[in-house]
Length: 421
Image (cartoon, rainbow, N blue to C red):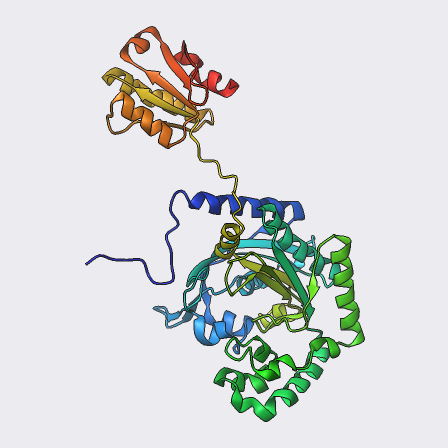
């Protein structure tokens, strides 16, 4: 029987992978401009990291994690998201003691969640994210949001919607929590079992329920903005003013709730307004998490970050019909005729590549016409034709595939001639 790819995963093949590489390079370039440094963490961590860091009331921990026992009877989990692992590394490597603060990091890599596969959502997906640790200045919140918007705009997306909200500090959240419990408790039996469990543990998560999103109590639920104390309100107003100074357009949505337990103060999402993108329009989400470092065993350290799915980003690119400037052409295809010419073409191709040029040759012993067709398929800019006669005279015929012009030059001058063109 044939072995097929596991459900919820995908092969990214040549022709498509170049788009991924382009997106990844754009993201790295933007992070360099914003002075964020790359960090790479393990693909699996101790399961406790995510139950403590992500929150045991979240769908991720309760339903979606890939957790297993290793040979030492330890509970390990494939990472379902990037923030908890980055914060674990921040604490373990004592980055809070670095001279340069805040510590600004970015990451990219596969994450794993056992959920129902659908368009743009996979059980193994690639997440890109940034984390800024060590500052509670609302300007860094605005900077992180601006970085996320810059990435989407840099790849050519235009139909974007940024929504922001404040979840307040602990005092504000306690007041809002009590109001939510009082609001939902009389009719909580009408909600799903998950919401019934969340009522006492974390009633804010009820607002994020996908099953009961259309229940009438959702529309009349108390708004967090009505329970912000003066400090939280001032903080949120500062974030909004900085976004306006940076010409970042946004909409305040008091119903926005992030799906992880560690968020407070600023929360945001970037949505796609592209026609035909799908029912789930969220591209990116993030927010502030001032208590997460302490939860994972570090000193009191404020933080803010976001994460996005590369798959979702590429789906938005397709929905807006954006043509990514992916370059896959070959600089020179070497056509060789005759045994000695074929042998020598190995050196020519090697010399071209050593000079930093993209080069290819025939490996199937094809005829002249078939080799030219192969050169067309790889979109070769130039074709260098070497026969036995040219080899004996130390020359090679160089053809410009766009103009059709052809000239005979010294083999020793081939690299220089292509570089000049």
